[in-house]
Image 1 (cartoon, one colour):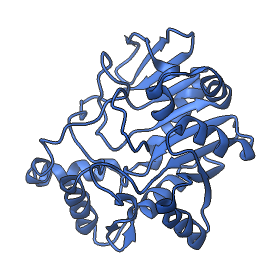
Image 2 (image 1 turned 30 degrees about the vertical axis):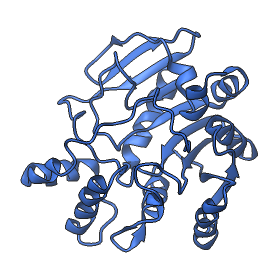
Image 3 (image 1 turned 90 degrees about the vertical axis):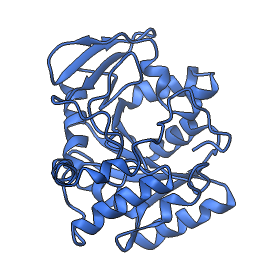
Length: 268
């Protein structure tokens, strides 16, 4: 298997819920939940946190040091550069991008995305892409996988602000969806990158399990509470929880999700 590194981007200055990555989720900071769940993916060789050199993000670096997590501090505005610089010391062949606002990230889905990238010799694979692609996995299960070679090319060539902030749009921009099976779509981007996107049937793309607002935080805190301290629940178990209590999904149903063209003044 190729050497694979997961990079979890995290910062304190989120515009809609400042400091969210260190807020409590069932007795642990949200970032710890993300790191520990990510580490359970069997195809990963290493996991590192990529935060910024801003003063407020020293708290993230301190948490990582106290838990024994690898941590890189880099550019606040150029997140693509932060990823590239964080990756280099590990000499990886494959990069997995995870964001710290996804505290129910699923390790099995991480493995499935890595496997799809390898099986189809893709430069980039993911659980979702922006329109005209259609998301079929819940928001908050977002996994992006790319080769280090593709990441390096994006780092060298990308010159648009949203390319640098959202890390990997340079790879998949301009790709047209072409369904291959109910489980997978393939395509080639305008820059020649081979793209693979995981699909799910039935479609759960309208469900929102990321944490970007107080309403989102309420939902995920209830999820952790209802699993009575467990943190190894699968995304299918969360689905069952929501099916048994439809009121959970109503808490944050009106929250709009950001697109790859939304550039945050504070960046990520």
